[in-house]
Image (tube, rainbow over the protein chains, first blue to last red):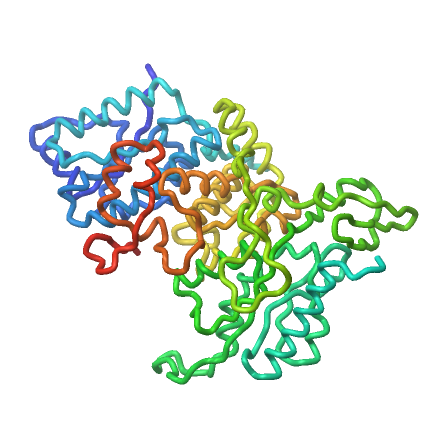
Length: 145
Length: 365
């Protein structure tokens, strides 16, 4: 069986998740390796969530916020964008492969667009291979009788 | 040393000024340094009575950032009041603090972040000539005990049990002081000594750039090697004037973002997140690196963020008390620049103007 990367998608429920619902409504199945975390606003996604996902072994992390034009709290998101760009650069600086964490700030999209975005991202992560950096691996505990 | 060195003169002036300020009642306390118990160390000292003024010193080993202690000392001299009552309206006692370039920028950040009331702080500005790294001096004398170090203006005389050697001062000055562009305080109420001119440094981010040029794998190897010795003592966090959350993310248990063990991943994540929280606020004072018992170069991470904040948003932290914080206040018009292209902005577009009415800009958090 070929390897499928584990993808975590942080998704703004106001903008991007309408896409998810539409997709579900049209009987379009999400790939089983994709976990979608719905948040009320993209600005609620903290650096902790992203790093925690990375630490737990996600092969790719996609932050999907809406566009700046039709966001109901645009300012918040701009602040976040400014922060996340720095985080992305810092991760790249310490040697995490570029593309592991991907930010997408595009307009509110119908189901297909989000699906295409996730599919493209999955392909990119597949090319990167399984994540090994900043992934916490515990050694199996040996029980001494 | 026969002649009084620059730092001896500064020490005298500081003591004189401290006596005057406390005698006239202009300030209730003064934050400075006292001599440490080990060679090449100093410890922070809060002077509240005239007798203690004689304990103040100024030398080339003042590596801690005094701004760290400012909010706490300020609240210690306030009139006590019940937290449920409104703040007392009468003017509160002032606190004087010694400040070089980077510390004064940290005080500016505390003013911007409303941690400190500008009216209550008397900044005693001292131009920094660069502080000496204790670790660098020690490295010059491996396996020898250094007992005392005498200080000249441009050289240090190191005394051990069986040796005396003179070394060049600038050669052992900390890395961050060597690349510092603003050694003179940006905020001065009382000036001590001569102002130090701005240094023209063509490559302030040279170390970061050298790392950036390496391959991804090499950088990862550097990162894992550098932080593998960390013992999670959190000295870097505790000494930092920017770290003041009542509960730090590393101490959080629910949710527990990081493991508390010495696991390499948890340690690495701690340093990445700690540096990230200083983004746009770090003044490169080097206190974190100076206090690290393991000699970890964690300043590279904050330096990288400083570089990005300068290149992307055109801001140097803590240069003006009135300026907005780069990551929290910004005009919406700047969005297009960022989204369209993450390359450095043209110089004219870089300046983010604080908006007076707040309709154009948004405040975050």
